[in-house]
Length: 137
Image (cartoon, rainbow, N blue to C red; front, top):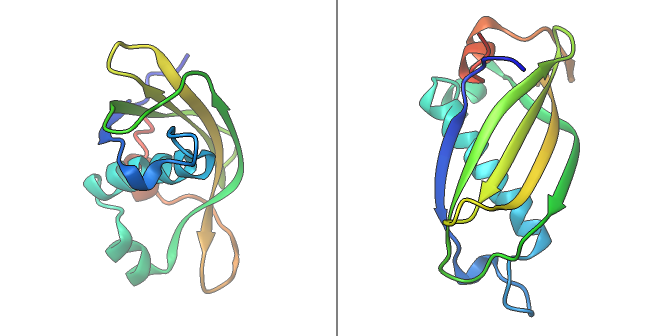
């Protein structure tokens, strides 16, 4: 187990997240996980402004999402995010977990993330700023 930073993000489930069954739509889970990722990288100096200025940033290469417990309208949840593996200088693995207010896991996800140069259109070595933004120690 590594000692990388665990980031937390609180969300209130809203009507726009729901499907016709009245629980969170599967695509909304991925969107909410993305909101949590943007939150921690932005708070750590690697937000959209930085990415657009320098033309480098994260891209999702692979994802696995598991749905464990139903989430309903107006339910408060917490998402934790943590880098669990640095595969090589270009790729890392990020784990995100959604917790219900009772502490039970509603969903978990593993994202393989690459560091991308938008001008060259290819993966490049991760910059120290990016590693810090992801809580890698």
